[in-house]
Length: 369
Ligand code: ZN
Ligand code: ZN
Image 1 (tube, rainbow, N blue to C red):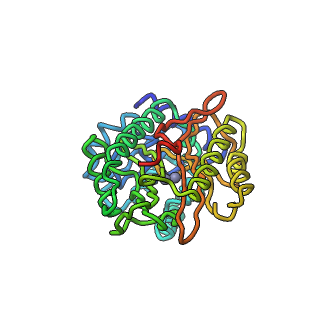
Image 2 (tube, helix red, strand yellow):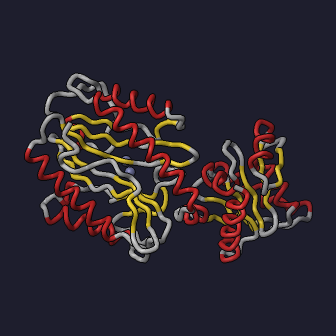
């Protein structure tokens, strides 16, 4: 981990120089973990070109010393804001970058006041500078260890869906399925589900973010399951639709359109292409089939330490794909009162093209139970 952390810190420091920042405060939990290897919470990093401080409280000092070898561990005895300001002064910085998307307005105001109130003792004020997505942009490109962790989650997710298929019989409730999946995944030694599993029977499949309910499955219902596994600090995210006994003809038509849209998007994925073009490849196909207005969300999103991270893969996303990016490709068609179809897989951008990391079967034959 020390070698990986050193590489990531080097990349971040290059970004700091580009932005003409003396130092940066990292407080987002995933970013802290990414840059230090720390698996706890309530901690922050203070980084300059030459220093790496890990600010935490009594509860985590031992763990931090063990996990974060590249850092000097500082145990704070009063508020985090006071500890940050004291250490920033000791490091003699003039500007401190903060993660604008992470700090609450209250803590940002308190920090700005404390950084700016130093002049009465003749010290220089420290300017607080908002930054956006500095670490998130680094995180968008995965290294081999990260991809391996995502693939491990996918392995568990695939076992999980195979395990639960025999439970999908009329009379079972949506939350019975979600509970069984979570229980199974924990039994495999993973942390649990990456997000609350979506299990939607029949017409409820038209709600892209349906919550599980006590709804019972009826014969002939479509079954939409969107699930992901978390482990080793990483996640995966998949969706499949199944049918009990046979697939109604309208659903079959919709399913074919969504599957082909996904295939087109994946085929177009390679380094140098914009995320918008990938989205367009799927969207064009769905629109031509007459369902354009029934596909109201983005095609996909980056995954890694979090379920939604950079890059966004949507109609307005100008992110240029790079080798090592991992994201979902999940076109869908949703018809209120009838139901919905979404097919979601996780892909890795490779040197020459793309590798689909997930392998849950999805032909028409595979989805009829
Ligand atoms: Zn999903
Ligand atoms: Zn997703």
